[in-house]
Length: 190
Length: 190
DNA sequence: AATATAAGTGAATATTTATTCACTTAAACA
DNA sequence: TGTTTAAGTGAATAAATATTCACTTATATT
Image (cartoon, rainbow over all chains, first blue to last red; front, side):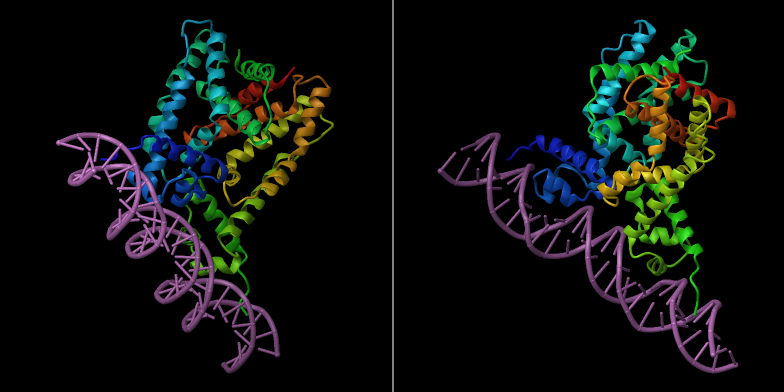
């Protein structure tokens, strides 16, 4: 018997991300995914139950990926600013290098494909960052306000900077990356 | 002859915004828009050429609205921090009060409905804010870095804060609003 | 009040898109 | 090398959705 070409799943994901980035969730069809992934439409149904399954599975892969990357090399006993800088940097780099995944996730959150309980479960995966912010408040490194706003502020500045950098094809130098962290830090610090 | 019920256009827009906020651009159908707007599907075609036209026209209405609100009461000769605060506040409030419009615009930017030249033209409408940031750098009120990043930072922090506030149904008090501006300002100031 | 004209309707039709399936191809194993 | 089995194909079919149109309704004009 012929074995499964497990690489096909990756091809489908890659194609889907590319298409969603270019035309949004509203713009993808099974035909276009199959074509982009260089296989027949029927083949999609060997590896995935249906269209929803492609999106649902890819969604979880992307969530998993980012949650993993965010906390890479994270040392909780490092000095506060350093610890926050590492996570900030991890998030920033991940968003830059996998911009298509960010776009896809954002679109999923406003789509009929991902249900409410799933969204809530996903938010929980990023709790460690929430805890780090709590610690910052306790150590009086950060402004004394609900962590909720501090976290939103931090994520917002990262997301938008990446989004605009990609759309306008702006190169961001290491120096400029540091300046961006400084804006974020100055905004959050006590 | 029977005159046009010009209110119908507003009903259609309202219905579309509501549906896109709830289920994303990928989730709307002419049937669902008609039902939500309480009219027959055929009626949609009296007021709009087709589905694309609904989205395209609504897109321009939303862009127009926000560009107008952003600079309401703006006095260019006011002290710098005050001027920036006003615009920051206008944007924040507009996003809060018309969150559905923000979601719709964001989705349009990643969809096959809005073409590239249109996107570029829209960005231009927000040039006055870009100019205010330039002024801030000249007056050495703001950090000395490409305005591009300062603007992205400012918009990002607003967008994400609003997004999360709405999703998590967080009430934001006037005091907390000021704290949020302070984060933004501390991040941007020299 | 009668007429004309365009709005409004929603079932019928056209179009697009998802999914299936009869068939072909390729690898594993005897 | 032949047989078996599942992958792979893409045209055919089903399902969902956009659009039209023959008809009804409302109102402005005479």
